[in-house]
Image (cartoon, rainbow, N blue to C red):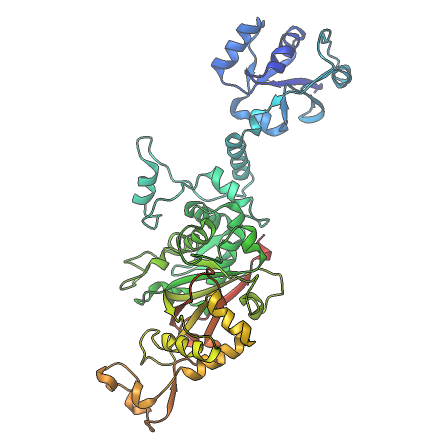
Length: 488
């Protein structure tokens, strides 16, 4: 097959207008990136002998992917041998000579940049990228067919893929754009999500991140959180199915949190920050849509709590008195980690008077005693979020995180007589059969390490927060940390 010269143009490009009559006179095959009406109008306006062909579905434009039009392409047996975009007389003459085409060039400027190719328009580029990804098998999820008269948000809600709040429709274009946030293969399996062991591929997690409203830069954190939640020791199946009002809380520690504009300061546990809110929500949507954990069916929480929509915040490490949680849990300094905890909703601890660490620990200990129930012992863990003003007390005294943790463990012991069933009029508590000595101290937590401590919050206010856990340790869920770096 002989080499062929092809020209790509668009109807609203003045540089194309300048070159088109000459292409038409020379019989060069011209393909228009515009629609039929606009293409015909351009041909009539310029007095062309023939109307340019339409580049149906932009197939040729997508294949050769020019930055600008007019684009003259020399194609031999389907392979490109040369091109000129815009007007550049010296290069045009060389390309025409190679193609054996005589084209009148007199009167053209020596150099004139062209107009942006339609394929460079963001929405078009996204559509073409999605089509290419589907053709290459990089995205495989089935698409929901939404009727022409259906309202998309209502249709998604009716099909049961939302958490009750509006979601961003996960079109193929949006999913492919989201996948640009990771270098991993979209077909790779991140993990199996309970309760039905749904295969959480990178692509499917990305689709749920789209629905949650994530920016694509946050996708690596979502992927790391899903990976952590799928770990056997996190016991996500039990967490989904329990009647206890607990759900995953994601704590992000490391420089990547700042890079994606996560909030570790004022209102870090609340509203107002896109990354915080959407990362937690993306995890919960993945559990619902990929694992099958639906409220009222598989999710049997008696009350639930707002954190079951999504719970996520960043650790404030730049001025923390302690090493980051990620480093404490085995990751390298400077490496960003995601730690997933099974928690109830957080509660505030107010102590505006303590100026030395023992007194502040005493206040913290009393709040920690209330996790689940003051007379529930050994079955629950806690996540303590120490605010900056409280953290300053420990910094100035030189207390390490481990020292704080050990002191809290010491202070959360109670005599058996105070936590046995019936004590204080409450039937809850330790079975009397296990109490030989009423004065025996009974620990609230199984060990000091069952009290996790992070630094976060705003500068104003002598407040800290405590999350109680779901059933802990070997009988329930253990915190799991995973690195974000492999998912970038």
